[in-house]
Length: 174
Image (spheres, one colour):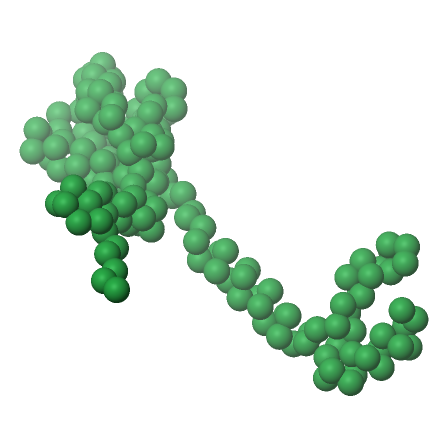
C-alpha cells in the first residue's frame, strides 16, 4: 500500500510504522509498538548474556615435594573446576635448590594429569617457564554437568520410574 495510507493505518491502530527491509523492492514496513519492540529486544539480549558461561582459567600451585593430602585436596578442587566448565592450570613452583630436581615437578604434573583423565583433557605436555613447570587442562564435554541441562535430563527418568510402577505418569479419570 502507499506510504501515506500505511502511516494513517498505523496511527489509527495506535502503533508505529517501522521499516523492516528498506532496500527490498517494494520496501517492507510493519506496524508495531516501537517502544515495546525495543524493550523485548533488550530483554532477549540480557537473557542471552545471562546464559553465557565465561570460561576462566583456575590456577593450582604445587611444590615439587607436595604432600599426598595437599595433592588430593587440590586434585578435588581441580575436578570441581573442570566440572563447572573452567580450565585448570597446574603449576609446580621451584624455589632455591629445588630447581635441580625439575624431574620431580614433571612427575607430579604427569600424575595430576593421569588422575584427571576422566574429567579433563591435557592441552600439551608440561612446559618449563622460568622457575615453574605448568600444564593446562580443559574440561571434557561429558564431564561438565550444566545446571539447567542436568535438571531436564533428570525429569524424564522420574517419569520412567513412575511408568514402571504400573500407572502411566499422567492418568485422568472421567
